[in-house]
Image: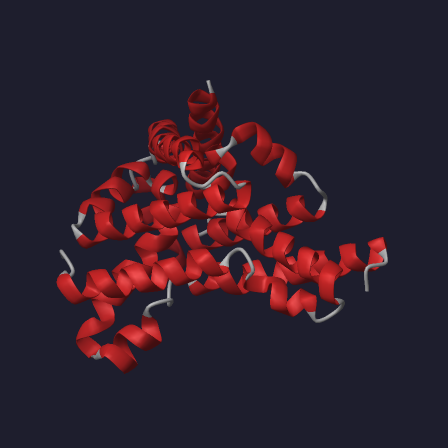
Length: 146
Length: 116
C-alpha cells in the first residue's frame, strides 16, 4: 500500500469530528470567560474611573486568572472541553506563556524558562506587530500624520 | 444586559474560530494569528472601538483586542511623535498584557510544577 492510499484509508476511517458539539462548547466556554471579564470590567470603575485604566486592569486580572488556572492544571481541562473557546480569550494567551514557562523551567531559568516562555505566544505577538505596523503605517499616510 | 452581550459576542468569536478549526486544515496558531490580525485591521478601519463600546469584554477579552490595541497604540504615538511613534507605540497598551503574562507566569513557575 502506498503512503497516499494509507493516508486516504486513515481519513476514511477516522471518526467524524463532532463539529456542532465542539462549536457549541467553544461558544459556551469562550462566552463564559468573556462574561467573567465583563464582571471585572463593570466593577473596576468603582476605584479606577478612567476607561483605559479599567480596560487595562481587566486584562491584567484576566491574565492573572489564566496563569493561576494553568498553574493549578485547571486551564488544561478547560481547553480540553472548550477548544478555541479557551484559546481565543486573553486567558488562553496567558495559559500558553505559563504552560511554556513551567514546562521549560527544568532546562534552567535562563536557557529554559527565559528563552522559551513565549515560544507558543510569539506567533501572535510577531504577526500582531507586523500586521498592526502595516495597518498603522497606511492609515498614518492616508491621514497625513507622517 | 451588558453581561449577556459580552457572553454572546465573545462566545460567537470563539465558536467561529472553533468552526474554522474543525472544518479546515488550519492549526490553532493560524486561527490565533488570524484573529489578532483581524483585530488590527478593524482597528485601522476605525471599527473596533465602536464594536468594543457595544460588546464590552466580549471584544476586549478575545485576542483580537490584543491586535487592535497594538494598532491603536501605534496610531496614537505616530500622531504625537511622528514616524517613530509607529515603533514606540507598539507596546503602549499591549505592554501590559505581555508584562503581566511574563511576571505572573514566572511567579507561578516558582511555585508550581507542570501537571502532566
